[in-house]
Amino acid sequence: MQNKVITTTNLTKQFGDFTAVDHISFEVNKGEIFGFLGANGAGKTTAIKMLCGLSNPTSGEATIAGCDIYKETEKIKQRIGYMSQKFSLYEDLTVIENIRFFAGIYGLTDQEIKEKGNALIENLGMQDSMHKMVGSLPLGWKQKMAFSVAVLHEPQIVFLDEPTGGVDPVTRRQFWDLIYNASDRGITVFVTTHYMDEAEYCNRVSMMVDGRIAALDTPDQLKSYYNATSMDEVFFELARGAKRGE
Amino acid sequence: MFRDPKTLLLLFGMPIAQILLFGFALTNEIKDSKIVVIDYAQDNASKNIIHKLSANPAFDLAESHFNAEQIENAFQKGTIKLAVIFPANFEHNLLHSSNSQIQIIADASDPNTASTLSNYASAIIQDYQLSQLQQQGMATTPLNIDTQIRMIYNPELKGATNYVPGVMALVLLLVSVLMTSVSIVREKELGTMEILLVSPVSPLMVIISKAIPYFALSIFNLTIILMLSYFLLELPIAGSLVLLYAASSLLILTGLALGLLISNSTDSQQTAMLISLMGMLIPTILFSGFMFPIENMPWPLQIISNVVPSKWYYIIVKDVMIKGLGFSSVWKEMLILTSMAIALLLISLKKYKIRLV
Image 1 (cartoon, rainbow over the protein chains, first blue to last red):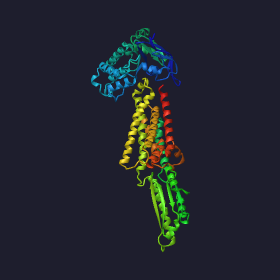
Image 2 (image 1 turned 180 degrees about the vertical axis):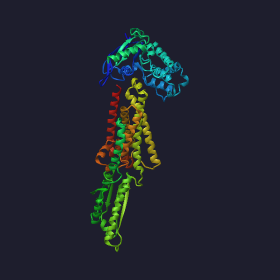
Image 3 (image 1 turned 90 degrees about the horizontal axis):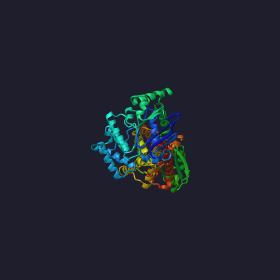
Image 4 (image 1 turned 135 degrees about the vertical axis):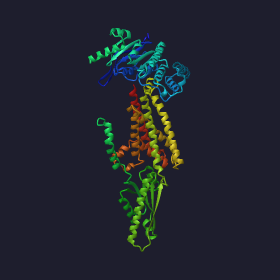
């Protein structure tokens, strides 16, 4: 019954006369890796902020993990994890202090914090740097750590807003291993990106153009529909179409 | 440059504002200070001197029949700065024993004003003495008017009575406003604020946990200032410490609320710091009364000074710490400060909530 963890119907956000997100409707299944793609300014971040409860929708409906985004924001917050576009751990706290802090605000017990914290550090191979300031770590490590912290409380859904900006392909690959890992544990992953190779890693992707969802399907289906060899081409095709429509 | 109104304002607004402020409003000159004359003598000599006193622009003179207790009350309330007392038989003593006394009492909680005013007053009396001498010729025995000056609240005229309360207001506001606004804006800049807002932690908790350390730090700072002024500057704390800390807590709360408000209106640490500094430091220095007497400012500035929280704090601290007054004398100022703190806290909490949801 709880197969759909995210459903939105005509979700809209307007800033003055500018419609950042224009009547988007979609569903995300449990355990799915859902790619939320689009060019800069297409409205991805605004949409993700509405889904996380950071921003109030202008109109439309949405349920996250079975909770209404207008009325049950507090429940939603317990059930989701979030990693923002900006790298967002405390740089002047050490690795282990960050883990303790974020686990603490999600209400994990001391015992859980200890176990999960150790598992996380071991998993990332960061035993040597656990007492280092996060600010001194390389960007790729910080991002892997931020993701691991975001799923530490085993949320039903984790929202990732351009998690891999500015890191090299190898690190990105490692990052995606972490995502698959989480997905295997049943965590639904909602990820925005504008790296089209990452889109290939998703189970399903939606393409956002000018605040609307222009296409939504599996990467393979999209490629065959648009007669393209890669997601890059699909993206160009859609983006070009949108400009004509303007 | 012309496309950036902020820079323009800074470049051309600042000099204009400063010249106007310092030229007209903020002067250390003393004029129209409220002084009271108690004339037990009611004779020619005393009337002559009172006339001379009232002619001086520094004094706004009133005659009254205050008894000792009433004088003290007036000083406590701060309604008078100086009292001149003529004893009965002033002229009689002067003419018959060539020796008479005048008592001058000054409110030395503001040492500069007190010494200036009492110097003026004794100069006027000297002047009278000299003119009498010339009238009577050298033949008679010289007249001697003995002016006894009493500096109440601060007999040694320590400058510290003025600036310690001022520094307290400055430091407390700076720590609370600046640190709160900068630390919250820092979280915004780093992106950690978003994470906190997405988490189940309530926004109120975020604010409270931001506020508590700075509150504690400010109280710690206050303690250090008080200890330094007590042990090093040997400035006694005349009134109740509890009252002093209570008033300071109110000021800190006001500062925390202001800091929160500032952090709502900007996303960069630099701007937050600038607003805090300009918005706190300058009004506190100008309008709290510790550098420039508020009574001498033109009325628009006097009205503005009423919205500066540190003005009320400064009055409380001086009354409690220097004059040793109790709650009954400062409740009005405490009430004003409390309402400011509550109003600002409510506004900032409300604004804060709007931002996240």
